[in-house]
Length: 118
Image (cartoon, rainbow, N blue to C red; front, side):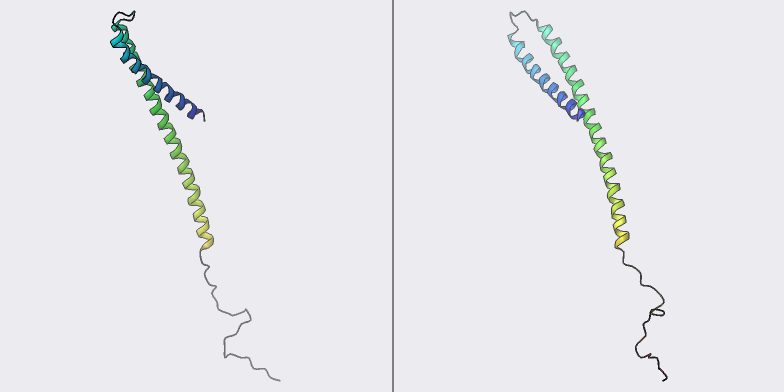
């Protein structure tokens, strides 16, 4: 959750930087006769570009961390599912018939009646 909040803050920072960049672009033509020199505007724009690149890098790293975490979680889930599937297969296998026929179970083959002497 903290990762989501920090990523959200970084996205907000990126949007703020883009907004500031737009404001700087509109301020350049209007700087004639104002107290802000074109050099100051240029320095501000360069600093803004540098900071925006830094935020972009942080966002990229956060996405990579989240992707890695998701991959690990998926791997763990896949392993658990594989184990459950193997257990299910083990229990669902058809049982092998017992060997040895009917001997000792009280069953007789047809036609093999025992003759009783009275």
